Length: 384
Image (cartoon, rainbow, N blue to C red):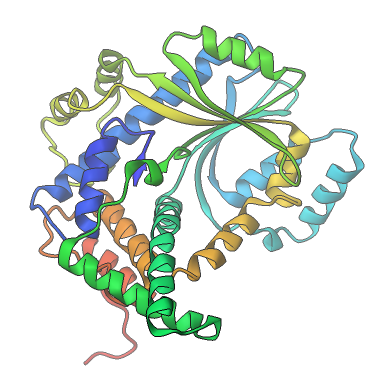
């Protein structure tokens, strides 16, 4: 995974490729912890600064509510929307009758912004670990699936089998690639593995045009729009990727000014020299991060949370598509989720990467190994 919101994106990608090849360096756990902890701090602080810079030109982005779960977000959107639109009011009414039907149980790290009348003006969020791992494995699937299909077609030609044996040939082709990965490792290209939406911002239009937004962003120091995509159909919005230059001296001062976090010490970072460790690490990376910015209307935001383009429905569709690629991509997801769990756990030394890309595992194998990182007991009905 190549996370464009991180300063040390290249280093994390190098570690990820090694772990997918079952190559563990003893210093990896601490390196991963520093990247996840320190780079996330910088990314979040830079996003908040970007929002502060936008506020005078666009809309009210000063008042906010912290959001910890999906149901909090959906409740907030429904309560902060009173527009005279029969479709929106119908969706809100249906949601209020049975909110549990709308995938409300997921955790979330977000801020929802609103104006003096309580109307929603935007939101920002940091993508959670599970979703990062899923997205990385899906990107890997798209890259590897082409190779597997080509191998399956070659095998079909060699042995003269037709379409009726397609599933068998794909399984055989997958095994060939698994053996190749075991012998020589795997190296995924960064371009195919770039995740651009770990750091996300949504802005409600409220009478602002695309041209006005783009003019404001282009006028901000250190902000550059590097991608633009217009979505139409069931999902209507303008999607930007904005690259932001990071003032490293500013970030160093911000880190020092905040009370030491118990969470950081829990992860095994230096307790006595945390600011010094942060500063040393800060200057060893790049000086840019990328933000995924969605410019939309309140109507479309409602549709994306409880309507026709509901985010969770798209996730389920993506997961079903991913299952057709076999064990390789499932294992990639497990390895990446385990890697991220190492970075957030108190464990700073591991002897082995427990998931191999060429193996086959049940989901509880991943859960068991993550619980071990936190020294949690394994669940068993009986003592034996």
